[in-house]
Image (spheres, helix red, strand yellow):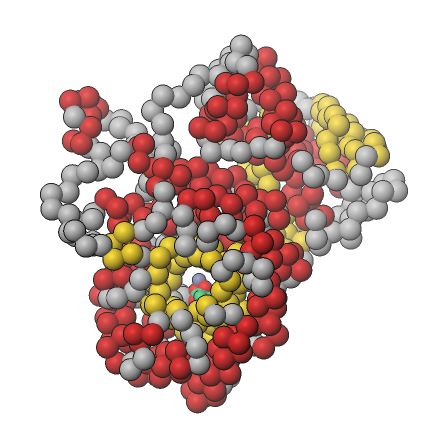
Length: 522
Ligand code: KIV
Ligand code: ZN
């Protein structure tokens, strides 16, 4: 928009989205199968070239998700991750078998620190592993990506040997990840330049960047890698991923698009879908998007100071380097209230990037009407919160039927709760040190379970004393940790909903429910 001379030839940079693998792998970001399918469908529609749909050997759930996404994808290549282990590669090959275009992405560590302490292998042994595993993958699919884990801390001579071996065995994409987020842009650019110059068969593969954000350099490093010759960028929606996350897809795509004058590249992403994708992933993972997050944060196009507002009124380019519309933010927002009908509600959901089946739409509409009766203005955030609720509860085995709480200065506080567990209604009364404790004790009595409460957080969805409370709860049971949200104008009801939603997510795998009374979780 502000650029002067834009180069005429632009190299295509492939977008490899790993929200469903590296993103989902971070603590608390677990998604259900339905959520993964919805995210994959949106990524496919918005033009992502490769969707890394999961790590098939990790669990049956991961395998099913990759296989189902592979069956459904219309345009994107579907990749499954595999360690350099024959069973992993066979499982990944099986999972992507039905894709129009399937990819096995296999990786092995190459840095001295990983070889000495994690792999306990010599450099020559790792070369042997690369030759065998990449060949095995290539026998299963045409499209094989090989990654040198911790590439940025690997001596360049050895890295070149590994890359040469991987390409010789059939790898078609070579990924050099900054696994620990340690590189600087100059170093990362130089690694790509050296490897591409020194490896004799380098021209037979596409090179890829994969950057973690431990030092906040993931985007700068990814773009430097592209300058060094990489033509695939691995990234995630909202930048979710291990530790500090991965490079954010929306930032990469908009940086390339907005600064086409200095970066002669293009992607195939429909940028007007970026906000929608961000909201969908935030809903599915229950990870909030930071307010000032580039491109998709609530404040990304908000102008607060008088000087900025004055400039914006005179000419938007004074303070905006891209238009809100280019990333899917619409200026005219429908105001919703108790007189809004089904059509307006449906159109609001579309504007917010939310697609619901007819049944869920009906449930969400009824909840919207109930909320609009209690609250004068229903804001976008209210609708997002109630749809989150609605999505999360569609397959729930434990449902809240009713809750009443006696709270106040004279304890102990008491909660009376009625739940439907697999359709059977059970009631319990419990005391607690405060009303929230009483509510959670009632749940524990009705659904005995072993899980640690790692997070309990209350936010107001909007402003005003009639605002809905949005409660986030993270539960950890064994190795699995899930985050869930619950929203309601009553903070205690929202707390109960959030806790039950987390239990429902856990019950989908690690937890077993019995229909007898009281219900047990083990
Ligand atoms: O960060 C990393 O090295 C990875 C690999 C599996 C590609 O995620
Ligand atoms: Zn990673």
